[in-house]
Length: 367
Image (cartoon, rainbow, N blue to C red; front, side, top):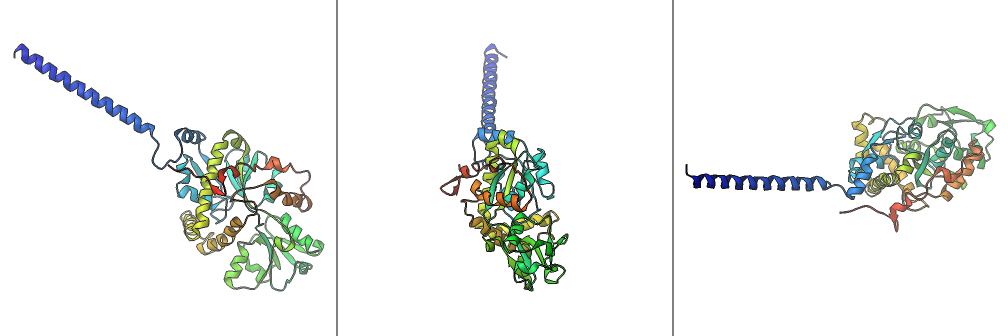
């Protein structure tokens, strides 16, 4: 081989290596750029995404399984619809339905929901490190339903009144407003959620949920009477979301985004009731709770409770105010045996959810 051909061969080899180096470098640069880009489904900035991811796994405890109730079905659907993913939130849902406040208070979970502000207040004496961040309506979910022989609450004197965990403060206020002498009423703690025990005369009345047992009796065509707090000029609250207070103070923006995603799902459920009920009922069935939450029952429940959200006197879904809670604050002291309760301002944050709305519309990021 001549000296010239050797030089030519070497030149070609160096050129090839240079081209290969450029190709590899280009690949490295493009790969780095791709790694730096957020997935298409993410709707927030890189810094916001990293902030939300850094908070770790957020655990939500469902207080009552897969019930079609605000503060519950919206969390399940926010996960199903990808709203948490869109905000880079990692959310784990525990649908076992027990010890929600205890787990959140101790920091083993971050969020749980309760049935009313009264429930929050009654628990506040024993469960610290909890802050209410959302209230979903200004209608109390409780009612007293009776067999048809009971024409007024006063008629309960000499009869049997069933209750589940306790006689709720607002139910006690109803009975007081009706002039019922409670020493003449036999109180029976219920373990059976079958509402027909009332129509069959096993008890004469039950303190229950207006969206549940009475709706079942209506669907069955059975005669009964129902008494609501509003009948006595009493105002309550419907469902409250609570968060671990320490987590809120350390990760306020993350809590805001969790609520933003949940409220986005609630918005979907208010607009697409049938689809929403289909989805939550399927989730219940897929997780072996279908018999406890059949679709027809879910549809009846959400049919009532969705109206409580829509008709809230305190603004957009989830918005809460101290004034909204004040009537129940007085009620739990008078009828709930709560002495020297903590100040309302220490139990709730009225600003977080309100800040997620502009002119009554939920602020949702878009690309």
